[in-house]
Picture 1: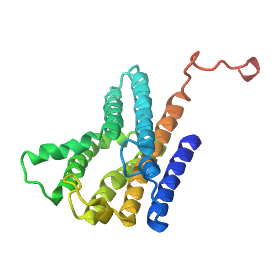
Picture 2 (picture 1 turned 60 degrees about the vertical axis):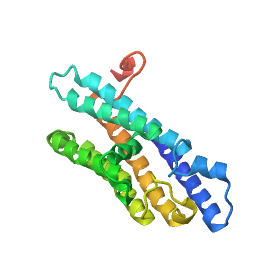
Picture 3 (picture 1 turned 45 degrees about the horizontal axis):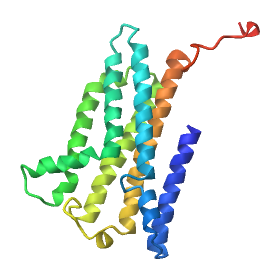
Picture 4 (picture 1 turned 30 degrees about the vertical axis):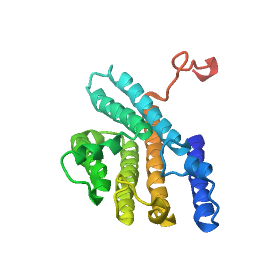
Length: 235
């Protein structure tokens, strides 16, 4: 976790550095800006975000395999979460949510509401998921429950809350092409920094929650040779 948090902090500081260079000192190095800015796609921060989402999915699939043998049926809840995080990892790289707007255009006229389409769809799905998972979540150990709530608060607040705030600040549909030099100033990039940082740390908190859950239930994961063999003096 220390390693992952360190990478996240380095990426956030690098993002702030290129913002300060561009808007504070009028030094714009396009390649560095595009590869380090948190608000862009297909760059280093996006790769990190998709990687930790994929790692979350991997941990969830491990938990599924463990719970399949306990006979409680709870593994289905974990399986759905594993598939959701696998989708989010793919979405982070392929930007699938952006194409929801294309579907929206088939039924409605293009407008500034375009920016709010995917947050509205994803937000509705989050509410539905919260209702379905309410009883399951409260059956978890208290520590895991609190970590899950913290993770959800950071992710929804970042991915949806600050996404909407950024859309309100822009005041135009970026799906239709706008003058980014005029619209996306340093304030917008600071809003997007909070948004992306919230998402990043939400996933890191979730990973910590999953590792803690595995530790509580099975005393950790042993990838080679099964459980560790105790020394004679430790038995």
